[in-house]
Picture 1 (cartoon, helix red, strand yellow):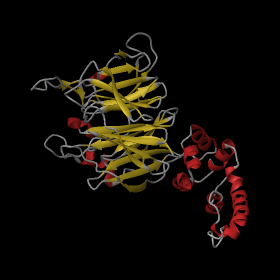
Picture 2 (picture 1 turned 90 degrees about the horizontal axis):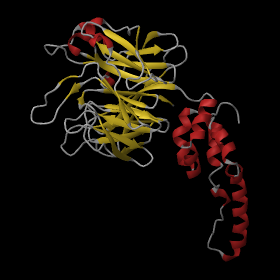
Picture 3 (picture 1 turned 90 degrees about the vertical axis):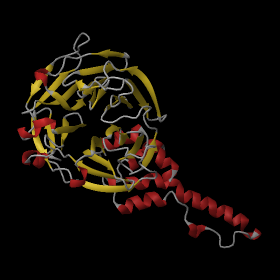
Picture 4 (picture 1 turned 180 degrees about the vertical axis):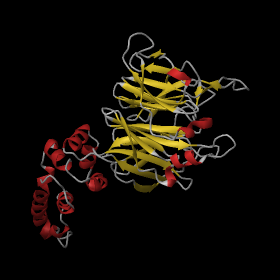
Length: 413
């Protein structure tokens, strides 16, 4: 098959799996034609045999070259295609043939039960424009008390899928096929919590005054379970994962009882070692900054902190000795107007994009007095991309207006 797969070659691929109705007998009830029908069935089976007779590795080679626009049709052809599409080998072949694009996905759910996705492919040189698609949900995105589930959702990528985790609800969004499905909600309702994925499983912590439980989600079993109790009960925290460790940073510390007794955790970080089932306590982010965004890339954690008059950018070196791990390195800050840090008005939705870049999407909320100043408003929805080897920030196309509060994730699709 050629390097590129056009609609004509894909049509042949689909037709080879479907028997040709013109080969059927006009009067199937006739006894005299039974023997002839058998021979025609053999002929039809032989006609369909070329694609079905291929072993899985060769069939994967063919399917691995299909264009991205044709991927949603593959699972509809036959069950075998659907199973091969879900296999890890298919993902690796797509990458090998250069069919995968490193992209930022901004995902939001409306009150009208519609999931909308904005996709920004990041080429090796420059970012393209946003591609917006909308999908109706096969269920209602509401929870028992009638409040919206996804107003402060976290988007966590696992393979080609994005799990949108909200308060009492979870959505699986397949970025290849556009398939959407409801998944089990977290055991405890959470809002403004930390979330990240490690080795194909999702971990969440914080976002509740009722519990300090850390939950683990197994996508294959669609099941949540409590695996640990966090050292601090946080609200408004952010999460990251690197080197097999789940990091929970920033936010407010809340207590139990009638009075929440909340005070700022600011730059403090708790770290849960998944394999070792134990807690580490890295040093707090230097300078007394308040963590407003975090992301894990490879063996490093990148953190953005607000210092009221500026935004600082830090890298945590994973793998140091002792319970406090490594050390912090200060990096060049992102090109965001300094005034957006006033009053804690800015948050960042950070996402790893491959192994050499991260994206930080700016979210600006109301500052003191309930207003947003001109500099802050101009930065809302800005997309900032950090090139890790080069140590440089660039600004990509701003988020579309309807996505300014969307959860973001980096996916190869």
